Image 1 (cartoon, rainbow, N blue to C red):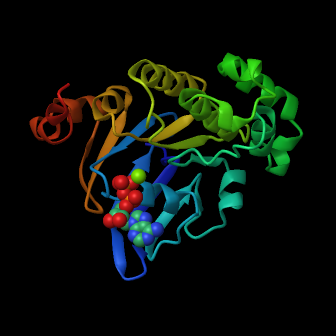
Image 2 (cartoon, rainbow, N blue to C red; image 1 turned 60 degrees about the horizontal axis):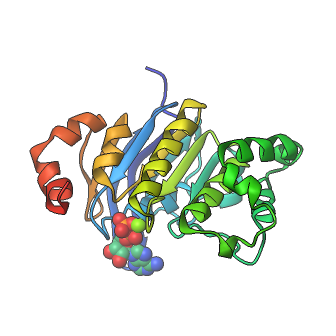
Length: 241
Ligand SMILES: Nc1ncnc2c1ncn2[C@@H]1O[C@H](COP(=O)(O)OP(=O)(O)O)[C@@H](O)[C@H]1O
Ligand SMILES: [Mg+2]
């Protein structure tokens, strides 16, 4: 089998004396949707931050497109084709939609393709096209999430890392967000998705990993985990789906 697009091996990450990840290993195959699920505080965001260079691992390896990126600078990781849409979206709320999108295209090799990149973003998100000159902070929650994802794809990532993109969105908007993840994937973008909506995440995931107190405790195809009684009990049944 081909090497995965992203390979994480035996990763330990700590905040000072407090260790948050313990020997975490995950593979993200090229072209896949990979979901990462687990309770609050399990270490999902910590793992994404280590992958995108915002946290330096204490131990272990992160290999992206054959290159070790553990501890590399975030902007170099973006330039290599890995973009992270953080929890809470990280938009510049006082800047316009257009300015936020333009900022996403900062790696030198994509800046030259700005116009084509904007056209792609506006084709995916017609609402953003209509609101180009509006301040990002005045958009609805769903539109802000679209803008955060739109800004990330301005850098033409081969791997898009999404941290709880459906947080705070109404059920209808959540459905649109999952449809969008699928559409981006069909356009060739590999996806690593952290989600609280475990059922919907597992439904679209080719592969999934369950994190519990900083460790991977289960992994497999999304539909297998979805059928697993322990998963249903812990992450799905209890919320009434
Ligand atoms: N900046 C931080 N400083 C210290 N501890 C943190 C920090 N961020 C997260 N943690 C701790 O690391 C653990 C994992 O957190 P996090 O990765 O945010 O979990 P999740 O995203 O799965 O909810 C938790 O125990 C959390 O309290
Ligand atoms: Mg989190």
